[in-house]
Amino acid sequence: MSEGNDLKLYCNLMSEIKRRDQVIRSLLQGTTTTLYPMTNIESIYLQIRKILELIALGSMVANKKEYSKQHAKFQNHYNAKFILNDLKNINPDFYPKPIKETKSDQPGIASQWQEYDGRALSKDDFVKLYKRCGSLMHSQNPYGKNKNISFYKSNIEISLQKIEGLLNSHTVQLLSGNLYLIHMKEKGHDQVRGYIFKKVANTIK
Image 1 (cartoon, rainbow, N blue to C red):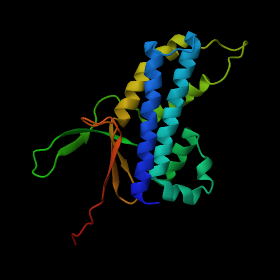
Image 2 (image 1 turned 120 degrees about the horizontal axis):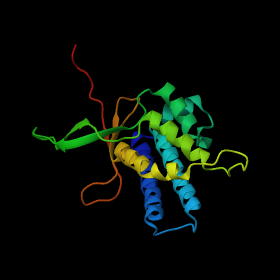
Image 3 (image 1 turned 90 degrees about the vertical axis):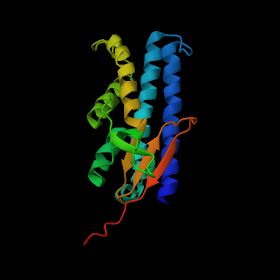
Image 4 (image 1 turned 30 degrees about the vertical axis):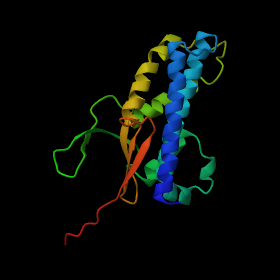
């Protein structure tokens, strides 16, 4: 499969993230409800967990060629933590890189990229949040320690802000040297847009 087709798959995963974010916002605003506060929070964290899995699967898609060489049954992989650990060994720069785009003063160049300096989900944040989501996916043992629901609730908005900061405008480094530029939305367009930037051959000798 070509990088162009892989990019389409990647954008489809990012679009699903946006839909799941809409579900979370609806639950937070009370537009949608599961009838009980506890199940609302559990449902929100289920969506966050799936968003994290989609981020990991997106990184797998971007590195599919090498990933599939090491994992014959890669089509069955879904555990975000394991996928990230594997990708780290294949492509150390696999993780999405959030950027800030500003208008360029150079002729023929629309924008220039700068390092994003806001809140963004780091790899360490990812692992911690994935674990936190998992802890709500099981019924509580009546003899165990009560879960601090206020803690989970208070961290939802922060987690969403970090995910948005990571993905809103980001690049994905490919092993080929090429680069994906991903916009979760653009002016006048709500759809996810993706672009491939080709590596320029070094002709200096």
